[in-house]
Image (cartoon, rainbow, N blue to C red; front, side, top):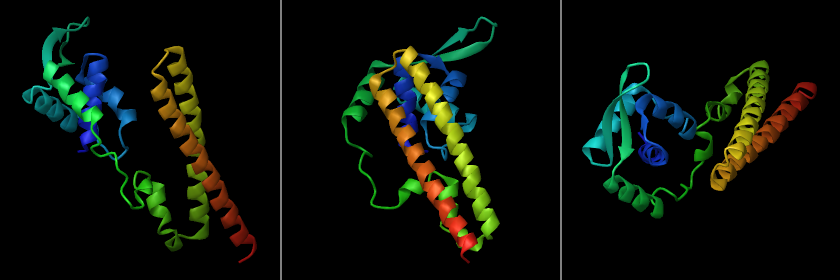
Length: 186
């Protein structure tokens, strides 16, 4: 489990106390796709943070008469989070080609010489469509953030994601063009 999952969880709880189910849905778009935000990860993490005194849980009954635990960040947790936020822990970039590890297609591209031409073409086209859908979703999210007057740094971070996706689209178009030229000039 990445340390960023723990810090992201505490940051979300600083913004608003919440229960595990809501936290799970808030966490999913904020962590790496390789992170598994399932109950087997989330609940033990919440228990550990509670045991460490970073968060505190209080039982409440919802409007639908269901018991749930609402978690809040303790004073100790606020200090811990600010210490982490002010530190430079895990901010350095590794001098490796780690940029593609979060994307399965980019990992697979390293071995595309083992795939037939048609499958390569199909995979690039499918990724191009997924990237276009992601850009559309990012645009909708951005509009909602502006309407809610979200923190400008969060909007700027989303803008970085948009730029990366646009760059990916350009790269995919170049790969498709390259493949097309291979097909016409074997």
